[in-house]
Length: 208
Ligand SMILES: [Zn+2]
Image (cartoon, rainbow, N blue to C red; front, side, top):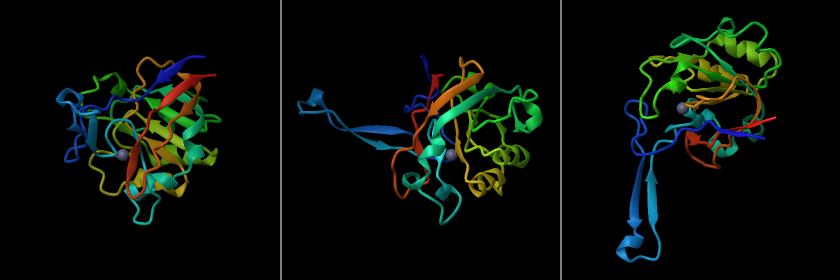
């Protein structure tokens, strides 16, 4: 059994959505200063690096990460590569028949090939057509290597709301470079955070 780590490293250099809070690990105590421990305090947006959106991100009464459905983030997943570098992804972007039976779809776009400290100037995102196709077959999760499931300049967040409507969840900013297309077990549990809009995840794939 092999494990693929499909998580971005979170560091002070990790790019974030324009205007969002960058990652900072501040030392409160240091062994080098004679203290008993190194002690750090973290400041960062939960949307830094590989993360899940909680429904509360875009719905006033939506679930916080602590209440998101854990079973959606764990189980059979299929990695499929797309050539599209920007614009909405529709079922036609995937090889014929490749979406059949998918419970969790992880989309490997050219964004995964960028260096981790590069913010994608353009990226592919979801479409209602693709979400409805997946929802109709009972899919629970869509993961992208893009920073959003909607267009950068979206004012309606149509795809975010559609995921919630179909009780599906998302992962954003995966890193799928070096992962062959195929079927895996996904493990990407959000932290049990209350009162926040998302959570970082350590996303891995296990070969079956
Ligand atoms: Zn997000």
